[in-house]
Length: 344
Image (tube, rainbow, N blue to C red):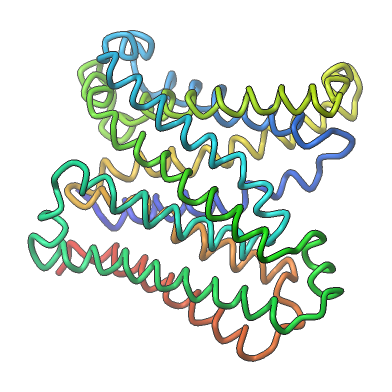
């Protein structure tokens, strides 16, 4: 067990979650639903399958031997995440990368981290000893940091003229964005519910010869498959509604290769955050339940820094920047606390 290394891996997952949308800036000429389907195909099906097949012997045998109830639960929670996941792109359109991921990840982190132990009847383990209390404190501290980043966003809306908001985020709308972020954040917690429901799959992977570090990859495959089903239905429905099936008819054109590459790259980067989560859990022992909070918290930290680089906070006043600075400092501290919890 190496909780420090596990926390570093989780933080790297958060970095992936913060930057995954950047390749979309290179996508030109396709409707949103069309390139989102390419993103989903690579991120939710192809990459997880390739990673699991490379790290778990007899992957399909492992999947076939798992109880049907486990498979159904993982797919179901993945589908719940899929509903929330559809809102993330819209959330970023209204709030920007920094603020959007801050609010969405905050809600997602709180529900996704604390509900699974409560449902499993393991609430007492959250405060079992000093180390557990410090670990839980790290989770709470991360949520405080996310709140400050959210306050910075609200302050930004109050002080900036409409033209300045639109210059950084073309469709900035705090009220609409907040509603979308609430849906995205809470429903997206289904991801962690699913990832924590695949114990039988992990056991089967170890029995088949998978190393501890990679035992969670079959769980990732099944959960993301559930999410893909929802996103596939939505994308095709939007193709019909917007008459955008013609996008797929341009596959032989050079420009289309760029669309597929950048959309697919976004999907692969996105999937890396949860591959890192499951890999890091194998090193964290009995504090593995905080993995989701660390991934989400570090995603907010890195996405907020990215928002600064992209100019989303340009022109804001001292109050807004103070909120943002406090939020970033608190988030960084929460990751350090989690990494050091087992040393106390």
